[in-house]
Image (cartoon, rainbow, N blue to C red; front, side, top):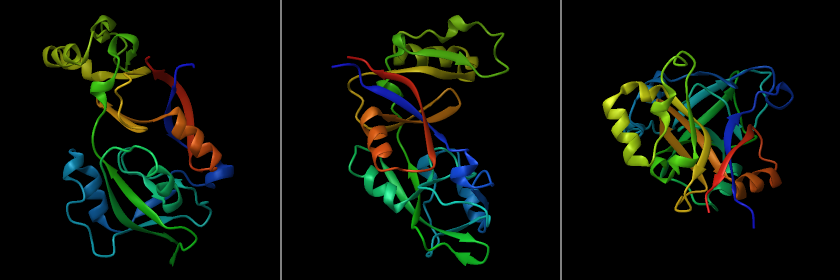
Length: 223
């Protein structure tokens, strides 16, 4: 049996699928949602939610997908009830479901029910650091890349403590340990937070024709 693949999840930008507007959510009617989105600590978000949830707006030309691109951070996507039912049959990080109503013009969208999903947790400790590959963001290319070789999680933390330039990096090749406990996971490291899925979940999403995502293979589970 071959190694299980890992995919990074990206927003769909094909106008044939999402319509002519990107991101699909053009604005939040309630400034409180902008305020929640700006909170740095994910566990501090959505501690108080309006009784009827939040309102967001899409353009008339926007097509509905199971994942709706928006101004919200990666950890707080807007997902359809259909997609949530599928995800909840897999192993997910801790998360909170936040009511949201989608409006097209003055009319509330009734074709699908959506939720903001505030994911918490971070699977950084399950990275196989020696086999993974790291690089700098644009603008940090002149820095010494030898800083980005890590023997384990503790080595990474020690290098961050000694040189904060290490946090100017991203993970490119993703190799995870077999101890990875989730099928959907986040690696909130190096000033960035990416959204990943294991092969089984990606295949289930393809089979169910889940819309709004595109996938790039980026690594595997180490045996």
